Image 1 (cartoon, rainbow over the protein chains, first blue to last red):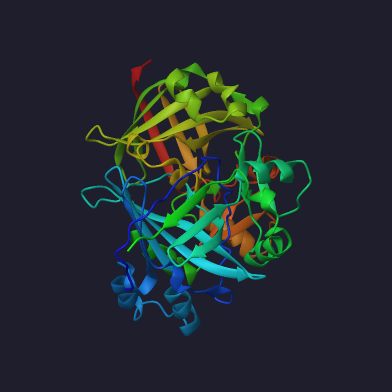
Image 2: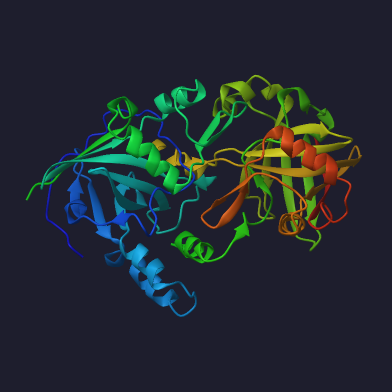
Length: 213
Length: 212
């Protein structure tokens, strides 16, 4: 595990809805790694966020043990080793996310998916529903700072429902459920076309990571 | 940790969402929702394997209505708040439930409510979970007895593999999630609701203990 003794600031600037995406952007073909994201980052309230490679995380042992039982291919195995595990503590709950980086037209995007929450007794907290992904654009400021710009779910919902943006989705007005059902390839095409359009990110959640030695 | 084991497993196989048929859309439109006061009460239920559980069904309390999105909240007076309780008296799950007549049969649509342990989970994390609908065929036998039947997933699996139906679904984490619209779901339900293979397997029988 590559870790850093760092301190820093994480600021959650806004709390708009994230865009829920059923299919992951990352695939074995497009996932990449970037060491700049690894490390220990801390929030403004001095709580820490740890970003580890999958095989440096708590999942390594389990993944290795599964090798004999589940006949996944070498490509599948490589895919998992390129994932990142993001974990942090908040109000006595330990959150874990799985993340993967994709580079599209020179820009870096992070696909995030919730993995689990453990309470202070290490017991899993169940969240009702099916986990979906969200996508954030990574802005590398320097070695010690980066910003995650999440797609603004409210704005994208608005332009999808008004017909100004076309991407495969399902929308149930009765329970106000909108979920993007585009495939990984279609998501990649969408980001190729709109990844530079700042309006898709303006007003979305923005998280600033700052690393201090 | 258990979840990633499941995801890894499902990554290399294909299955339906476990336990019951889950859909992205509800099986009812606003106009289909009906309210039957007889359903209110405390019920003792047993499944085919004679496992005992309890259900408390009441009107949706005012303090839980904000959990519902605005459009469905408009008809929340026609809805029920159902708590599943185990034999030790512990609440296992809570759902917003709507009764609807589709074709000549009645059905219950379950939409999950938040349980207390989830309320401490931060919003950004919770927003990544989409709630799904579960439906049951519902039969009131008399004022003090009803039975609910789950749709048999293997029946649907066979219809799909035999190319006998064309119903929208997405494969998510290796699992099939039905994304058919409410209209398409209703057509499907009407077509198969009297087929004993469709709603024949998982039956729960409930008897009234307390009248509300």
